[in-house]
Structures are given as structure tokens and as C-alpha cells.
Length: 67
Ligand code: SF4
Ligand code: SF4
Image (cartoon, rainbow, N blue to C red; front, side):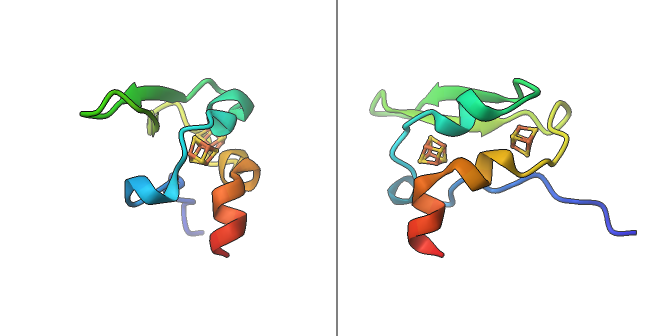
């Protein structure tokens, strides 16, 4: 069985508006909103806490737009 990977929420800043929906929906509290160098908040997943449920990806409006 292949182990599920931790989701990649964004690969560059233009793929995330920092809306915090992923942070809010995560059932494990695995996501923290961390400021980038300009002070804008972006989500970061704690790989140890994440259970790879995928809810953060399904809630993200940007992922639906890109898909
Ligand atoms: S839900 Fe998507 S756009 Fe919103 S903070 Fe998370 S990754 Fe960024
Ligand atoms: S995959 Fe699930 S547990 Fe992991 S960060 Fe996303 S919502 Fe949280």
C-alpha cells in the first residue's frame, strides 16, 4: 500500500490568497498560518500531525480554480 502524501497547498504565492480556509477546516490542527517576508500569512502543514485526509485541499477555492 502506498502511503498518502502530505498535501501541497501551494507551490508559489500566486496559488494561495491566505484565506485560512484550510487552516480552519483541518480536523487535526495541523496547519499554521505563517507570515512570509512581506507579512502575508500562508499555511504550513505539520507533517507529523497531518493525517492526510485531504480536507484542506478540497476546501481551497484556488485549487478548484486551477484544476
Ligand atoms: S485554503 Fe487555499 S487559498 Fe486559502 S489559505 Fe489555504 S491554501 Fe491558501
Ligand atoms: S490533509 Fe487533513 S490533516 Fe493534513 S493538513 Fe490537510 S486537513 Fe489537516
